[in-house]
Every structure is written in C-alpha cells, then in structure tokens.
Length: 225
Length: 298
Image 1: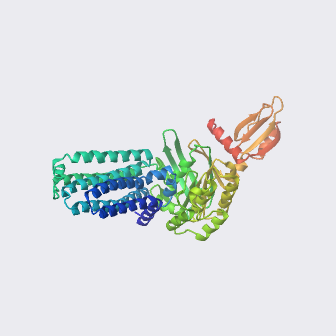
Image 2: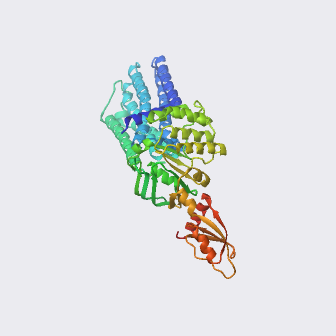
Image 3: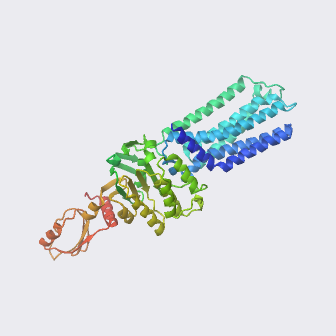
C-alpha cells in the first residue's frame, strides 16, 4: 500500500469538497456554541440533537457521494490513470470520507453526551439510547460509502441514503420499546446493560462487515471505468 | 531498454454485445503507433486494458515490462494517458491540477509545463469549468506531457476540437517525436491525423486486429489500378486483389500487394493500365474493413 499516494488522494477529496466540509464543520461548531450559550438547557439539547443529526446525515452523504461523482463527472479516468491500485483508491475514498465525518461525529456526539450529563435534572438514562443512535448514524454513513464506492452510481447511492434514513427511524422506534433501553430512559443514572452493549457491538460489527465487503467487491472488479 | 513498450498476447474481453477477440499487438519502444478503427471497433477497450482499468478475460498484457493489470500502479508511473471521455475537476484551477500531478510524478518538468502553458495559451489560474473544450483537452495534454512519460497513450484526443486546437495538439505530439525514447499509442478514427503523426499503423474492427505494420509498408503495398479491358479479355490474375469496382470494361482493382511488375503483367495480358493511384490511409482503411466484413481472406 502506497500510503503517500493514498494521503494525496485524501487531500484531493478534502480540497474538492472543502466548501461542504467547512460549512458542515462551521454549522457543527455553531450548534455546539448555541447549546453552551443556552446553558445546556433541555431546549438547547433538543434543538442541538435535531441540528446535529441533520448535519451528520448531510455531511455523510455529501462526502461519501464523491465516489459516485467521480464517475458522473468523468473524472474517474483521470484518477485511475495515476499510479494507483484499486485498493489504494478504495482506501482513500473510505478513509478520507470517514476521517472527516468522524471528526464532526465525535465532537457533536461528545457534546450531546456532555450536555445530558451536565444539565441539571436531565435524565442520564438517555445516554445508552443516544450512543446507540449515534453509532447507527455512523453505520448509515458507512452504508452510503460502501454503496457509493462499489457502484459509483448516484441512483444506488441515493437509495442507500434513503435506507439509512429509514433505518434510523426504525431502529430508534424499536429500541425505545426494549425494556432495558426504553424503560430506563428517564432514570437519573446511566443504566448501561447487556442489551446496549449487544446493540452497539452489532452496529460496529455491521460497519466492519460493510467495509470488508467494499474492499472485497473492489478487489474483484474487472472493469474500473 | 525494453524492445516492446506494449505487448498484447491473445487478449480477449467479452461483453454482452461486444467481444475483443484474441488481440496480439506489439508496440516497439520509440514508435508512434496509430490505432485506427471505426466507432465501437474496440480501440478504447484495448487502451483501457493496456492501462489496467479493464481486466482482460484471457491473454497477457505487458506494458513497459510490467504485467497488467497486476503491476498497474508501477507501470502507470511512466505512462501519460489522455482520452476523449476524461475530464479534469471543474471546480479546481489548472494550477491546482499541475500541483497535484507534480506531487505524484518525480519526473515532472516544471519548465516544460510553463512552456506548454504559453504554447497552448492556457491560464494557470483559470478554473477548468471556465475553459472551452479545446482548452480542457490541451490542459489534460499538458498534465500528461509534463510528467515526462516513457509511454503516451492517447484515446481519440482530438475528438471535438476545432481545426486550430487540433493542429496545436498534433503539433505538440510531433514535437514529442523528437525524443526517441518516448513511445506513443494514438487511437483515432481520423485517418488523416494518424497518417500525419504515426510511423506504425494498426487497424482494428469489430474487436479484431486486422493488420499492423509500419506506415510506409501500408502506403507502398496498397494501390488502385484503373484498367481498360478490350472486348473478350478477362482480368488477369493479380496478387492481393481486395476489391474490383467499376464497369466490366473499365475495372478499378484495389490490391494490397502491389508490385511494379503487376503493370507489365497487365500489359502482357492485353489489358491497358490507365493509372496506378496511390491510396490514402483512409481509403486503405475503408477497403481493408470492407473486405474483412465481406469475409474476404487477405
């Protein structure tokens, strides 16, 4: 693996998507600032969560769709005729997209968790739900990445984004009905149990599986442009 | 030095509606090969296989001594590629593209790049999306040439260019000829361009290589003989007859194995030779493809 080449490709994608990335980061920072300015009230938290989820989904889709854009804009031949292998191209797309997404994801999720923990009277029992849903957003982003990189098609990428958005609702709706998660959401202490661990582990395993599948499919492609 | 910059042996690639069929092709180092074929003949598929962008189903491909597609990353360090359907990033400037490519290729020649900027009348700080089609092609050619590749692969680079831009692009390719170490594979359906710049010609049609030879051999071997047959005289047996057109008394014979002795053979048979026409590469190409499609063995 030519790390230097992968790094250059990542920098290229960041540069070409710089407006969207910077706008998302700016919106994220503003959201964090607003939550803090409102003294981490319950209203601030609710507004913050709505904005954060919107930013994360939008940014995930925007960065991850760049692989499909390469084909649509016919820039893929330019990239693929550089001295790179399919593995390096795939790695650059995934790592570049996920890194920039994770920066925002970690910052925003950490702030929401901190707000819940630091807001007087706010139920700490929400933490397992928030963590599971945050990892679900990460999982949806990985799905969009995997589909975008392997199909390089806008139609499939948009469909995967819809599946991701649908799964966010379905999973959210389902887990609040689990006694161990939903039943302890109003608790004043964090009730982290086996169910939460299992769900987060399953989500992380799905992420790893999707990334492995992406590399597998890319390695077995016969036509790259 | 490697004798053959490009070597295809029995390369096949099957799609639902098209098959590239057992391609054998050898491009000697330092040569400029014109790769001529009609639209859909298999030129782009062949060049994509050469670049490792499409994997062959069968056969072997060696480019600059590297097996493709396995060693494509190494091989592509010494290849400059330009194709009709290749685009640069519209939102970025040419200067950004030059910086990006320079960071990848250690042999990037900044002085040559500046020189090409002037000759192509390109502006470094202009965004690609603000350029005309001709300027975009010239920008892509600049990026391919300034990396000083040992092999230049051009897939219909002049398609859609105005005559001035086409002349500039071809002129620069002619200048590349000055470096004997550089090899060029140039695909086009414009035979006039190919005739201008190539020293080797390969014809491809319906996924098969029809013929591959040096340009002089092509042009020397093909002739069109305008004959006058006296009444009750048959056309004499001539070698390499590809096609016979014209009326019964005034046949026009196309041959791909012309020898000056053919004229005396006709005269001895009582057939008058009105003219022996030299054929253009386009005429040769059309005659070759038609005879192949009609199933004539040459």
